[in-house]
Length: 197
Image (cartoon, rainbow, N blue to C red; front, side):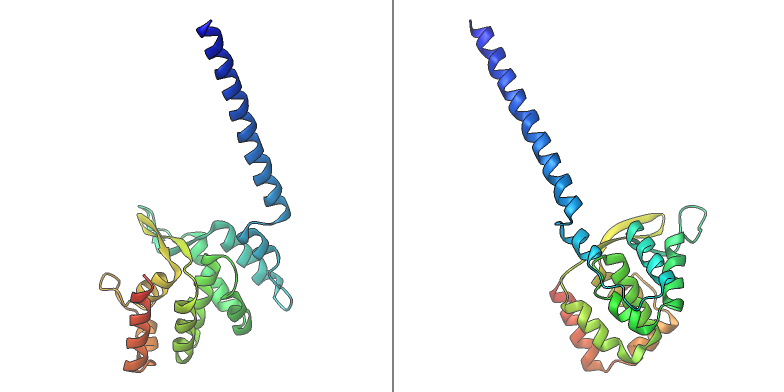
């Protein structure tokens, strides 16, 4: 009698478990299809008016890959396609397109847009860095050499682009950006960055 009771209990539990799992899958699928998840709905509602179609295609490819890259990755030290896409975007997108992309809901696109604007207009770096440091934290995968890790967009810009980390060497244009900041502005940005980590 006990054995029969346990089987019925197990059968009832399994039926409930399957029902629950399938319900979650169906609800997730439905919400994804109608775009109720934040990333999905935001991307679908991004205003592309005035964008060059080639820039839009490049942005969507960067968003699909969803990572940032140093110039070389892997044992062969090759530049990945994502790195080439970011460079192409910096050369081909207009300043107004890049400014609008700083509000794009994908963190890889957002980081590249900020990076390219900072490189192109070092005199505007204080306003751009203030904006990104006050924005909510966005994470992105960063790959360089044979290592990869998840970092904040803010960390990418401050440590890897500007070279403010002791572990990352500065570049000619990062020195230009820093030289365009007053000591007071640089101190404010560093304090703001450290307080949000």
